[in-house]
Length: 153
Image (cartoon, rainbow, N blue to C red; front, side, top):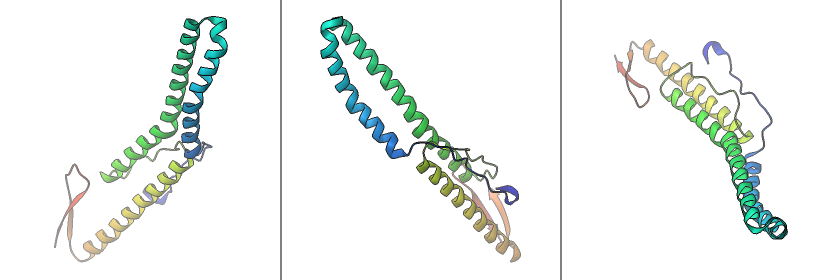
C-alpha cells in the first residue's frame, strides 16, 4: 500500500469452492460403496480378513488425501486471510497480502478485504489531515485490540 503501488493477488487456476466441497461429499459417499463392492467381489478371492484390511487401508489413504486437499484449498487460505486482516487491524501498514488463495471465491474475498483496508486507510488519512488542519494533535495509543487514538485541540 505504500507509495501508491497496488499489490496484486496472483491468479492461479484453482477449482471453485463448490467443486471442492462437492467432490469431497461425492468421495465420502462413493468410497464406502466402492469398498463394499470390492469386498463382495474380492472377499472370495483374497479372503475376508485380507479384503477387510485392504479396504481399511484404502479408506485411510483416501481420507488422508481428502484432508490434504481440504487443508490446501480451504483452510490455508482462510488462515492467511485471517492473519492479514489481524495485521491490518493492528495498523501494520506493511502487512503482506498473501500472493494467492485456494479457490476463486477466496481470491475475490481477499481482493475485497484488501480494497476495504485501503479505503479505511484513505479515510483515516483524510480525517487526520482535516483534524491536523484545524490544529488538533493526534497520538496513537498502545492497544491490543486495534488502533486507538487520542485527539487534543
